[in-house]
Length: 20
Image (cartoon, rainbow, N blue to C red; front, top):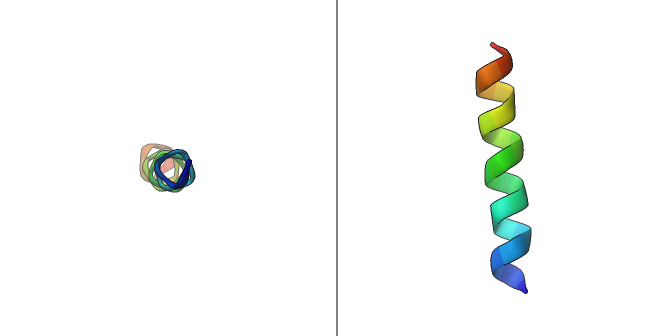
């Protein structure tokens, strides 16, 4: 379950990078 939380955090960070 913790893995999912970490995955969401990584996805959000990647999304921010993609936006740049």
